[in-house]
Image (cartoon, rainbow, N blue to C red):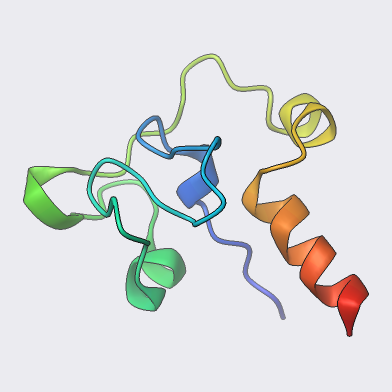
Length: 79
């Protein structure tokens, strides 16, 4: 089973960046954080995963070309 990272659903995630980064990891989110992120996960520098309150996940995925889902999809299409 493939587990989609939840980082892109966090209020601290920076969608405008080509890297997967956020306030806690401005130089790139490490694999362990991508894999384990979720409610209550403690990130670096005192940040904690907090789901965006105004997110309609399905609509946002369709509208944005730079979400984690879209990045993974582009990567897999290259293969």
